[in-house]
Image (cartoon, rainbow, N blue to C red):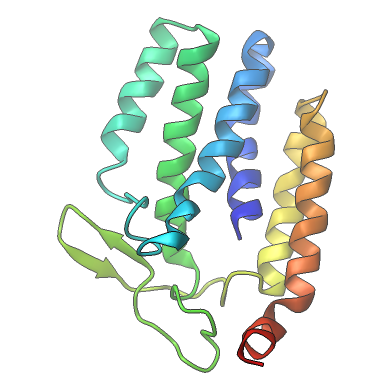
Length: 180
C-alpha cells in the first residue's frame, strides 16, 4: 500500500529528525511524498514507469551526500524524497505481484529493473497490497513517526493508518465490486 510506503519513509527519516530536529518538517514531507510518488505509475505501467529499484540508488546516495554537505530544507527534503522513492521500489519486491487479484491470478512481476532490463519476481512476504500483514506493518512503522514528529505529521499518520485499515478490510472484495 502507498500508505505503508509513506510510513516506511517516515520511519527511515525519523532518526535523522531526532538528531537534527530543525529539518524534521522537510524530512517528513520528502519521506511522505517519496513513499507515495512511485505509485503514480498506476496510470502508466505500474511498478515500471516510476519505480527504479537499481537505478534509484545513485540519485538517492548523491542527494544524501548533498544533504549532509548543504543542509538546507530543500536539499534535505529532496534527499528524503529520492531515498524513500528508491526504497519504495526496492521493497515492492517483498510483496506480491503487481496484479489486481494476485490470489487468483498471480503475476511473477514485482518491479522492473531498468538496469538489467527485466522484471524482478515477487517474494510474497506480504501476499498482496492491502493484505492484513501489510496493514499490520504500517501500524508498527507508524510508531516512530508518532513519537518523533509533531505538527501536521501526526494527523497525517493517523489518516494514513485509517486508510490502511479500511483498504485492508475491503481489499479482497475490490475486484468483484469493479467487475459488477
